[in-house]
Amino acid sequence: MPNNVIEIDGLVKYYEGRCVLDGIDLKVPRGCIYGLLGRNGSGKTTIIRILLGLEPPTRGTTALLGQDSTQLTAQTRGRIGYVAEGHHLIQNYRVRRLVSLCKGLAAHWDAAFFDHLMETFRLPMDRKVKDLSTGMRAQLNLALAMTVEPELLVFDDPTLGLDTVARRQFLEMAIDLIQKQNRTILFSSHILGDVERIADRIGIIAAGKLVVDCELEELKNRVKKLQVLFPREAPEDLYITEIINQRTEGREMVLTVANWNPQKRAILETFRPESFTELPMRLEDIFIECTRPSSELVLEESEV
Image (cartoon, rainbow, N blue to C red; front, side, top):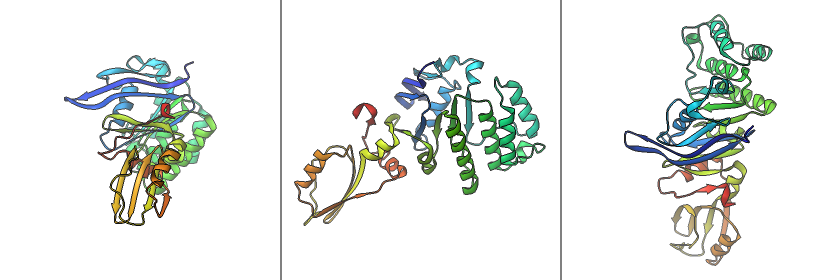
C-alpha cells in the first residue's frame, strides 16, 4: 500500500493556449488533511478534476491511491469520496431513491452509519433532492460520501453557498468524522477559516505554480509580519531577502517576511529601530500576502 495517497508530478495544463497549471509537484501522505488554496481561477478545481480522471493533463502525471488518474478502476473509485461545490445530485430523485442507487453502486456501504447520519441531519427521505435546502443537500452529499468508507475524501468548496449555521454544522460533522476515521482529505475552499480549522498541511497555488507546500504550523512560523518604528525616516532598503510585502509611512514600516530568522533580525537591528512588533497573522492573512501579483514567495518542505 503506497504511503502517498495523492501524487502529482510535473503537472501542466493549458486551456485555449493559456497555461493554468505550470509544473505542479505535490505528494499527500496517508492520513493527512491537506488544504489546497488559491484565488479564483488559479486551477484548484482543475487539479481535482485531473486527479479524479475527469479531464486529461496537458503534460505530467497524477495518481490516486497508487493508480494513474487516467486509468482509475471502478474499484479504486469506490475508495474515494467526493463532495463538491453545488452538491450536484440527481435533482428529480427522491432522497430514498438516490440513496438506494448509491448503495447499489457502492463497493462498501455502512448502513448503520448512514442511518445514524440521516437521523443526525434529520433529512426527509421522501422529499425530492431539488426541494432540499442547500444545507440539506450538502449534508446528504457528505453522508453519501462518508458511508462508502472512503480511504480518500476530496472536498472541493463544499460549504460555498451555505449560510453560517449550515456551514458550521457541516464542518463540525466533517471534523468529527475525520477524527474518528483517520481519513486522508484533500480540502479546497475559499473560506480560509474553515481550512485553518481542519487542515494540518497547506498548499497555495499562485500564477500556475505551487508556491507553498508545508505544514500549517510551519507556515505560520516561517511567515512573519513586523511593525517597525525608526527614530527618523524609515530606510528605503533593509537589505533583507524574501520580503513579501512592505509598506512605509514616515518613521513606520510594516513588512511581511518569509523565513524570518536570527540573521534577518540581526540585519534589521543594524538600522537601530526604536521598536519592532510581530503582528499576528491568520491563514487568511498569509494567503493574501503569498498570492499578491508581485509576490515571488516559494515555501516548500525541502527548504527547512
